[in-house]
Length: 262
Image (cartoon, rainbow, N blue to C red; front, side, top):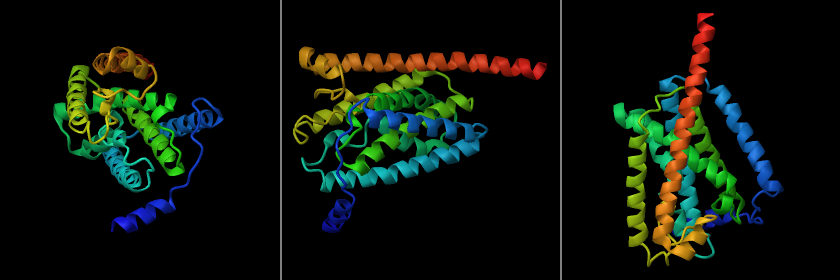
């Protein structure tokens, strides 16, 4: 069975030069990706809760199927052995699970996940497409998978804002983020020897973070300082997205009310 899977994966192992950040290829990807996002946002602008639930469930299933392919590819084709940092428990992996769960959530649980997707997920998607350090691979299918994945996250986050969903109580989303970060740190520590210190889920250590600026901080001040700073910066960024989104939402709602009265 493993041999059959490996042969199938090798059939799709089309190699390519790793794209340079802000080179021509990256710029074209950004233009195309955001164009598709805005087009889909426009098409889905009138979705009610039931249609959004169904759409997020389908997105979650599609992401899971694509993740299975990715994990099989990494386990069979990847020349340097399994890439432990691609284990599906990164910040950007969460929408895969939350999407499938979304239609079945109720009350405060759904509100928390909604706010998480509209802030932390949106932040993760933007960060990955604008700093593609971990998004560009030497294989076409893996690069397409990564780029498409992160633009889907951007779409999910923006859709929740543009469809005026119940995005409240950022503190609960923050608690969820910190709990997931704690779980990620535990797994990073448990698999430190097996992964040869390369597993860094949520970029919280104890290994060095493979992202710009934070890798220098980790090298100079150690992984603990880098992890704490990363949690602070990522949480502050998500909070800024939350506050900015609420402000824009209030202004948009006020304009709608005025036009209705007139």
